[in-house]
Image (cartoon, rainbow, N blue to C red):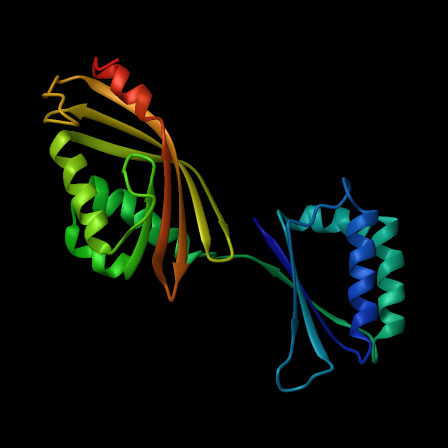
Amino acid sequence: MKFVQIIDYKTDRFDGVNALMDQWVEKTRGKRTTSHLMMGKDRAEGSHYVEIVEFPSYEEAMRNSKLPETDRIFQEMVALCDGMPTFTDLDVVREEQLNAAMARRFFHEIAAGGNMDAIEEVFAEDYIDHDIANEEDAEVGRDVIRRDVTMWRNAFDFTFELDRQITEGDDVVMLWTFNGRHKGDFQGIPATGEQCSMTGTTIFRFEDGKIKEGWWHFDLMRLMRQLGAM
């Protein structure tokens, strides 16, 4: 179970605290168990700060707290704060990355499931598409997705397996495997009935809760070989 620690403190010397955190990151390289660190400033009170530190588990957090570097940096941090920082320890009972969930909707609900109505919910009106299989470097609009999904669905009965999914900021990166049966014309190749597969990577950039831009890289050559085209 993931574990999160919230550290709440006040200071008029944040630059010093920030420099201490840089030192801690450097000194604990290869030893720390922290998976994510975020520092926030209270808009209503400029000297009020909150740190959110994420760990894979409570046990890993305790290992991290026992590092001599962690103890030393904390003592120096306290000296820069107005009073003792307070700690809140949280076991994560629900975690939902909304952009990642939206990205999965494309693969499972739209592409494999055929729900074309969901395109307007998932993609921005001025969506920008970068696809190695298309002649244009970039195409704009939801109709690009509608056209390409229709083409693939006419040519194959297929499913997607999402092998990896990574989120950072507004970006969601997915490593996927396509498995399908060739049932219709595909790039001039008549239906062969062959079962085929390929792997690929897609990066979606989100804006205002919808996919604004997408980059597609996939092993089209492998697919064409399976269809007897090479």
